[in-house]
Amino acid sequence: MAVNPSMKFLQHTLLIVLIGSASLLAADGKLEIKTEDFVKNVLERQIGQVVELRLGSGEKIGGKVEKVGENLVHLTQLTGAEFFEAAVDIESISAVVVRAKTK
Image (cartoon, rainbow, N blue to C red; front, side, top):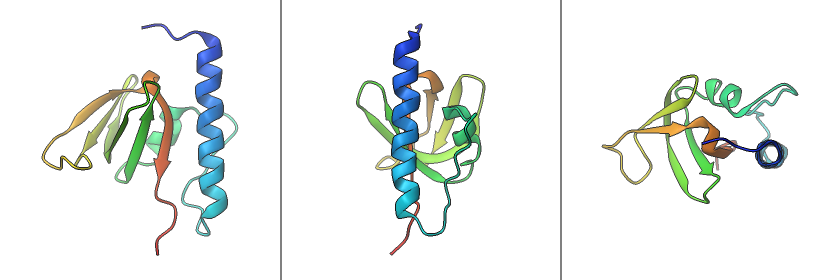
C-alpha cells in the first residue's frame, strides 16, 4: 500500500509531537530524537523495551520490541496477550509511545 507524501509528513509530525511531549515529562530522557530520525530508527533504539505503537488506522498494539527489519517490527509479549507475537508494518505506524517515567 502506497502512502502519499502529505500523509507521511503528518505521521512524522505526529510522532515528533508525541515523543517531544513525552520527553518533556521525562526527567531521565529515555527517548532521544534526532532530526534525521524516522519511525524505524526510533524502534531500533527501543529493542528489548516495551512500547505501544499507534497505527494510522487508530488501533494500538503494545509489546516488547524484539527485532526491527526493513519493513516490519517484531513484537513479543503483547500487552494483554502475552503468549502472542506480532509483525507490524512500519509504514502503518504513526507514533511510538514509550514509558519514560516511573512512579
